[in-house]
Image 1 (cartoon, rainbow, N blue to C red):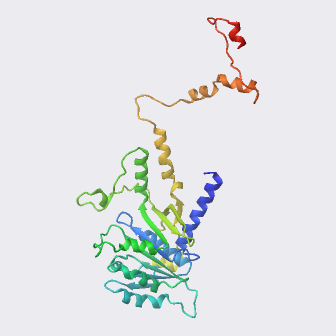
Image 2 (image 1 turned 180 degrees about the vertical axis):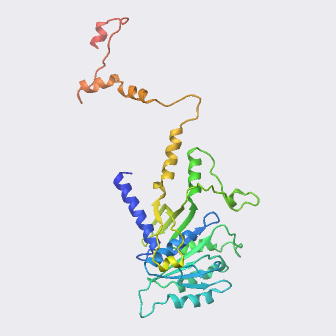
Image 3 (image 1 turned 90 degrees about the vertical axis):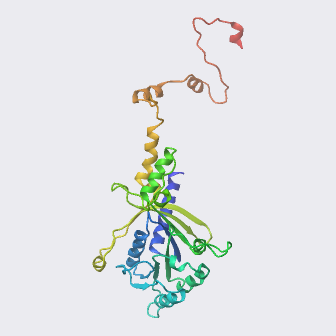
Length: 334
């Protein structure tokens, strides 16, 4: 990719994610966040809430697994053991535009969607009733490690299929250390490492991470444009530290940094380090600096033919006779 095209692609991709995190210009009415035990969605939710506070949007936190109200939440609704109708009746008054502030932006955050998945066929109507157009954006967190009950009929779509079909953007979260370990194994043509529950070891729920492991969240973004085109890109989010109520009152909030995964120093150097190691052998296959200079100084025979004979004038063979060569006039004429 040419440098100008690569620079344009980088800036365009970062702009799309920034608009999504800031929820500007109706970037995504319904965002689905796929997390797991290895990488929970708390850092990403905190980033959304921090940016929402900066833009003076109302944050409505629907707690289905959270016990305490987050410091940045404006409205805290407990949704445990409530039906979809009861939950909708509590949410709708907070998202309905008021005559005094008709353009007030609202953000609905569900810390988990699993307690509401008992009837996936009712999800579309429920989400449509609580997400007014133009003013409200909704974030749903789906835990991919939690198993679900089998469907009543084999033709019924799974809850995850329903959510992915309804969502206008999907964010899949992965720890940065896992991505770097997988990339290093791929460069060495080794099997990809497995972590946590996927290791199938008895009693193992989480993998151990050394304190020196890189910090960050890899976000695989799938953004669906209005035209139907899907934009996919991988980013690294360096979350901002959790904001307390005192920091919020003092307006000392900070947003996290975002870069492309391909631009991360640890990810970009993983390939170069593996290429530098070369083939494991008992002898050195590389060249010293002197050998490299001597090789570049060698003049090959066909260089003289290219300089002495102009283009389109044909070619000739340059040959210096040795002591043992037999001179033949007929062959020289040919």
